[in-house]
Amino acid sequence: PYITGNQEFYNINFIVTPKVLIPRPETELLVEHAIQFVKSKGRQLSALDIGTGSGCIPVAVAFNCQNVEFTALDLDFHALKIAQKNIRQVSLQRRISLVQSNLTSGIFGKFDLILSNPPYIPEEKLLGLDVAQYEPWLALNGGEDGVFFISEILEDAPRLLTPHGEMLLEIESTLGEQVLEIARNHFPNSHIELLKDYTGLSRLLKIYKE
Ligand code: GLN
Image (cartoon, rainbow, N blue to C red):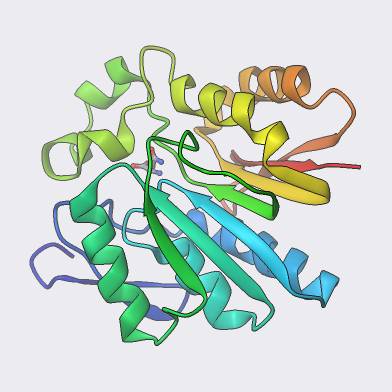
């Protein structure tokens, strides 16, 4: 994809450069659940995507649902420039706003839907993977135990999620139980589940706030 500069995701063509993670098929699961949630509500919703990279998540969801507006954030300014191109390509600039922010530290307000495919590969494991040679370290490295960003996101999320809102986080398949425990600490009264991807691996954390 970096050679051709393109990658298809959820039937949409995305511009990719080495500044952004190449969209993965696993992440289509997150998009599918997000679309299901937005369609089930019917009314106008606000959504947040944390660490948007190429912008593939908000673009795929907003392209398929008219009733959603996104704030998409990234720490990396170069990634935001790529996301901007991808948003313009499908004329979604009026429904997807880009913000440069270190996780949600610069974000205020409430969202009906919070999404993220954060960096989640444990550092030690990442050192042995081919992807680390080509793709941004910032988009992959989940810290020593792989849950650094997931913990940070879950810690700040309660103030951002509306009642009856939903949160969907992509996770590393081996970290399911650990992530569940962190989620239960921050959302003690919410319905929390772990969903499997199409290869049968735990891939998605879903939180539904009562
Ligand atoms: N699924 C990606 C991979 O296996 C990891 C993406 C991420 O860390 N968010 O390379």
